[in-house]
Amino acid sequence: MCKDGVDYVELQTKLGTMQVDEGKIIHFPVGILGFSDNHRYIIVEQEGSAFSFLQSVDDPELSFVVIMPELVCCDYSVQLSDEDIDLLQIKSPEDGKVYGIVTIPENVAEMTVNLQAPVVINTKERIGAQFIIQGDKYHTKHNVIAEMHKNAYLLQKQSEAQEGAKIQESV
Amino acid sequence: MLVLTRKVDQSIMIGDNIRIVVVDVRGDQVKIGIDAPRDVLVHRHEVYEDIQAENQRAVLTRQVDLGVLERTIRESKPHNS
Image (cartoon, each protein chain N blue to C red):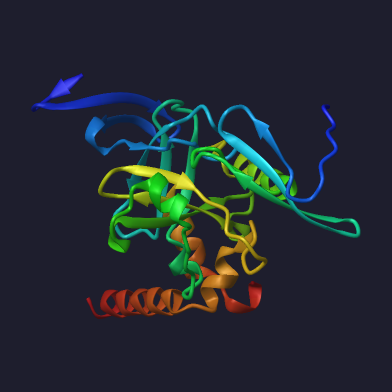
């Protein structure tokens, strides 16, 4: 499908019908662990939200919620090996964007983020991969809310909300 | 399963591109070196299984409103966590 000179792929996803700009598709040469048949994804951001969707283009039924790990754990950093950097074709650190996959149970308040196996995307070349961080500092189930309470992000959001409430009161 | 006996510094080829070397043996621990193309994932089996299982759990099975996630965080109390 082509609209205004841009090629689109139409997807019927859990998030609704999506028109995906082909130029925004991120190629995962290896795939997400356990989903090696899916090589094309897009990031669907929502304005004002810390969360985004990682949506498979190959399988419209496959979508994840992701979050930038530094919002959950402020000293979070990923050290990539030379092989990893090669795979992603990263030329400078600014090209890399890191996401943590969020697991959302029935009780949303118990959502966890996998900080042991982040997804790293070269935003310039649109190449992505999931890496496993060695060592035992991070695991697959960090409670998002508990971690955020240790973090300035939440304090900031709360003060913004209070600010909003004050403005509403004064109107 | 194919079982081979190797000594320290001896190796095994898997296909044309993957080489497994026995680096060191101490007691019941074996140190293994792996040369593999960069698109071949190499992980400890238990870690691999753990990540794979977590990925499976993370797949959305219902529609999720990101706004609800944001609100849940905003309205949470530190002592609940």
